[in-house]
Image (cartoon, rainbow, N blue to C red):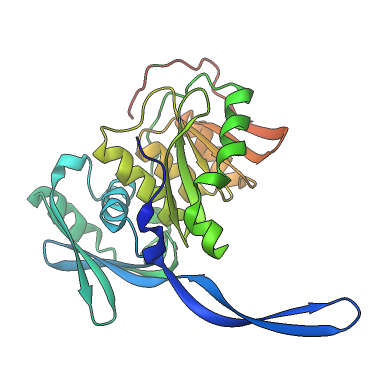
Length: 279
C-alpha cells in the first residue's frame, strides 16, 4: 500500500518572495517559494450542489467519498455509484451519483456547507444538529512503542508539507506503528476525510490500526474517526473537552500531545480487543 502521493506537486503554486535576515543588520534575498494551493471544492450530489469546502486540489475523489461517509450522507461506500472531478470557472466540483434514498435523506437535512478551510460545522442549521450521535467502535490494543514509531516517521511521508509548510496530514498506521497510508490537505478535517475515503476504497480500516493526525483532536476529528470505524485516534496536539467526551461515548482510544518520547492518553477503553464493532 502506497503512502506517498506523487500528485502532491499539483497542489502547489510557485511565488517570488523576499527572505529577510538579520544579525548585524538586515538584508533581503529574492527567491521562489512553494505555496499550498487552497481552492473552492463543490460537492455535487445527483446534480445538486450540497457543500463547498476550501481544500487542497489533490485526492478529491477520496475527499468527496470520505466527507460523504464521515458526515453521514452515505452509510456505505457502495451507495456512491460514480465520482467525477470537473474544473469550473471559479474552482473544482466533484460530482457524485448516489443512491436515491441517500439523496432523499440529504434533502431532508437541508444542509448547505459554505465555509472556511475544513470548517466542518458551517451551515449546520440548529444546535441539535451540531452534536450528532456517535457510533461505538472497538479500540485496538495499541502500545506506546507503536505510537512513537508512527510519530517518528510521519514527517517523511508529508510531501506537500515539506514543500510548503502549510498543510496537515492524516496517516493510517498498523498495529506496529508502520505508516501505511497518508493524505494531506490545507484543512485538518479535509486531510482526515481524504484518508477515510482512501481507506473506504481499500475495504475500510483494519481492526488493529489507528489514525495519526498532525493537528489537535477536536470533536469533529473524533466523530469522523468513529463514523469511519476507526477505533483509535492519535493527535500531535491537544484534545478538546468535547472530543474526550465523545471518545468516551464511542469507546474510542484517544491520544494527544504525541511528541517524541511522550504522549497523553485521554481515554483508553477498559477492555480493548481486536474485533471491530460498528455502532
